[in-house]
Image (tube, rainbow, N blue to C red):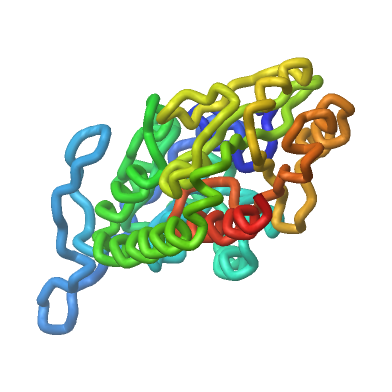
Length: 324
């Protein structure tokens, strides 16, 4: 994609997570992930099955999956949110520039299974999964369905929100209680900030953007869900309820003139991705009213897929609210 890292519109998510490559050759392995019975001949909990509704029909999955493959890095983040470290994930998922250090530490030792969206069947089989999670590449998982059930939830469809996808993954791995606990932390933090910064929220208008290629920028992004949950007013002509990116040229930066504050992404080393740095260096950017007023703020928790990332974003936005 021609967008900075961390993008989450339907097409941008796939391009950010990795380019599509050819499907791996079919693996001559028997199905994996079937646990043996205990000495008494009784089925273990991992042997028990349940029916699970997915976007490709109802499938049989383990009652409590324990060895789960993530087809995309968002899947891996969601599994961690639910207390599961994946047994396999795409190349490049463990990237220190794109996540908090503790998440990186949990993922850095996980075996990789090939390019995002096109897992290598041999690598997947070697991990002996009992479930595979996929949200973007159903046609690329045909070989994998011979190894373990694939729970597919289409995140590329229009209007899909990260918290809705996360809820589906939680159901797939039977950890909905764990998800509710994380959701409550988020809701409690929202209430706290809404009370403490009521005046700043009521008297400011915001937008989020990132740099593109060839003197363009991307207006909007997944962080809008958190900004709206907090009650921030959104300017720059961004439509209500929309989180999709709008590509605009630098000459259209005047669309930001009604904004009190702006947010742009940086990596976890606090450096902007190159396209966003190009935007920040442009003369037209420096003439935007919010920029001139020193109210353009960087944010590390830009990619939105879990309540952990959402809570991190709220912490950063609190620092911004103190300055508007």
